[in-house]
Image (cartoon, rainbow, N blue to C red; front, side, top):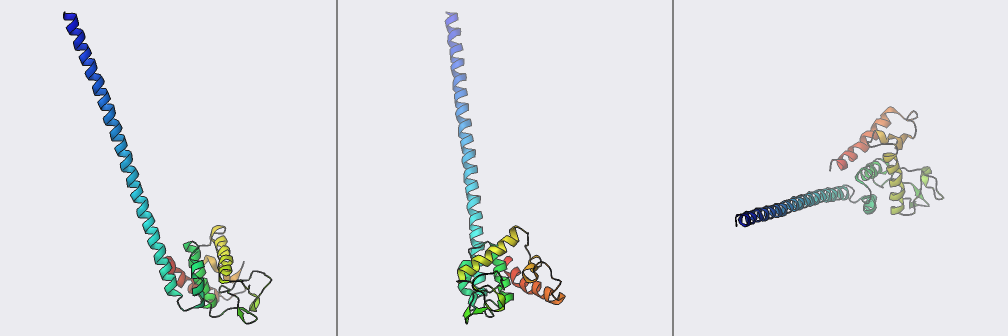
Length: 198
């Protein structure tokens, strides 16, 4: 009789321990899932906030550029320019201001605009006044000049107007006046900073 009671108590204790273990395991699983979901959704919120910030910055950049070049010939190129990354955009706009006053002083071929607002001199079948490249369209111009600027940024790490003086001088500024070099950097830098600080 005592053995049966003792056996029953042992079974009850074992059963209770089993239930506590199962319950603890269940609570632990719920806790882990809760942490995972909280972190997952928290990360999602952080990602969304980051994307919103990037989108807002990009919209501000687009509005700034469009307002800046309004009424100038380069205005027609803005949609193509804005396809580029922010640093390339800054150089495309600021160099074009210095080299052509955003398209008001440009090389021509047979009296027609060559869409070369950057003083670009890549050899092509069609060359405009002053030995400057003639582009087939505004899109072609932005694509070609944009790729060259992107190469200078990525391959040679030219990320400031003073770095980008190579655009004016080529491999050496020895043949250029010190004043002209400083003026180019200053003029390009003025618009470059307005765009980058956006």
